[in-house]
Image 1 (cartoon, one colour):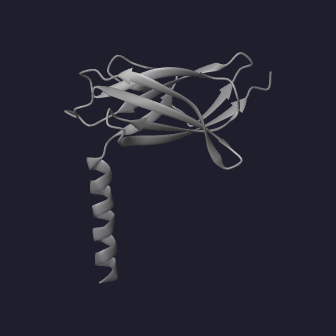
Image 2 (tube, one colour):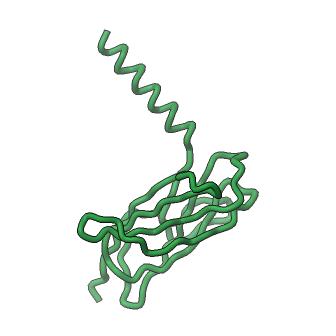
Length: 131
């Protein structure tokens, strides 16, 4: 009986995650079909900064004119606001925007739609280069 309940719970959570196929990926760049090139969750920044591309993929036919990327840096276990990047949505099911990081630390990027509804969230670890 417990195995049956456990199996149903797993199926339920898998279906929910598939239905909400909105993803935020950190990468070097985006190819022509909206795929991430060299995605990562940890970035090593150079002395003069290193650019990161935010790639947000949302379900097809989602009505959204603009996407906001809100960037926060974790300082003393608190989220400290860094910036908001507003990017118009296109007819594709993905939006990308590049931002340059200079400081090491843990960053959280939230993605919001036109009505300030949170669509996704991603965490990026930034480390300094040894040079």
